[in-house]
Image 1: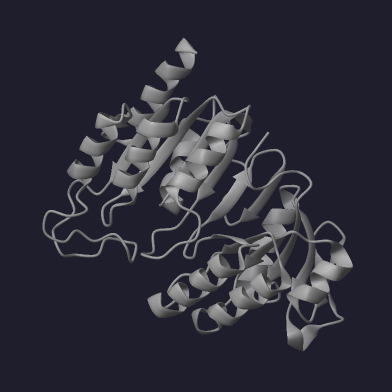
Image 2: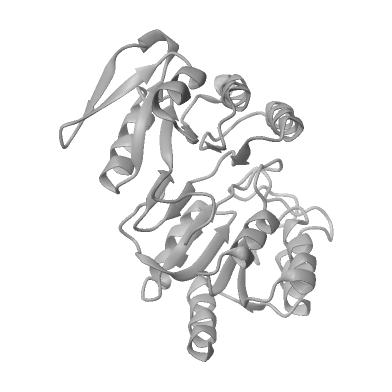
Length: 295
């Protein structure tokens, strides 16, 4: 099985007619994703032609796209200043899953659409500033390369896009049910805990890799959740052991302040919860490989 995304998912792309939207819509189509429409009010009624003889219609709104196609997932490639309105439009339309790829969204806007979606209670947000989600062999919604790995029995949840790709490669011999990049901004929709819970409930996921990074306390909270609720093995990696205090590293949320949010503190919390934590992605993959041998 998989979590949040499967072979039956019908995907629309908000911002499909822009350069990034076009490029990654092509990649999603090539990986077998059911991309059923795009959204651009200025180009409603047109179609976009993709390689392979595939023509995808463009709709004026998310609501129209959902009505005509039965879409349940939207991937957003919308510039930061328009992202809040685009997310709210998707939420108002009742889309089940909205994946916000956009980087650089102001924290105030993210807080507003996060709370709006939470109050509505019908839409799961992934992101912002994330690579999306892939269930190999079934569907790929976002910018994760689909040729790194194939279907298997591992789950992966990661703050980092590039580390998502590396871990998928490191464990490609085992494969994944789903890999999800949740994003590294201070305010995000789906959390480590949300993904861990879903993987725990997925009968085909045997074990989970969790990738965190410096800043905030998400990993510590995930450690508490793992200790209290997870029966499946979890292996962890925390990026940023050499990060200097007070300097943002890569992600807007990746910043150590005083004794808060350090990689060492996160590693200690995870190990106290029974999670084996690797010092490098390769070591983390080896830890998982040993666990899988024993299952």
